Image (tube, rainbow, N blue to C red; front, top):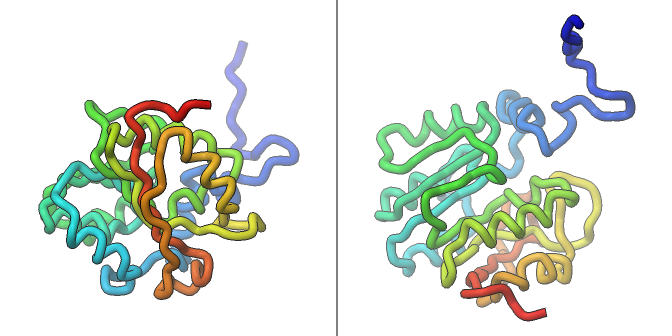
Length: 218
């Protein structure tokens, strides 16, 4: 039997890949066109909580998922951290490569959910990643973080919280965020962010979650 030809047309009722944020095509289009309201454009425009936290944090193995142009990765590498940055958008990785020239970390064009390092990370840095994922993928995010953060390690970064309306960015209700992460993490820090980029203004919080040594009792 002759193999069916892929017409490139999505199944009936499904949006094309370039309109679905769970696909690389969606983000490739935005990076290629420069439509990136979540992108700080420089390290100096990142909220101060990032620099304050890492200024006092010892060098460790760090993962940055959904790294985009990866300004944070270069800063952390220069500070002595052993950084792995990944994004499944090839266009994002190309932009990251251009501004990370000469750095000492790893930059991967890869699917976060399939990422399988030899050992778990001491710290995973969250920024504009969870809020980029459709809500149906949030349980998978929590499970992957539990797998990728070593016991006693940290999930730290900026979480977009609030009413769960349209997106991206997809804000998350604080109670739902707690329900997702509490089985495997304990929240140690939860601070409002006053210097967010406009797209996140009023909804961004700096949070630090420590990985439990074992799952919380039910």
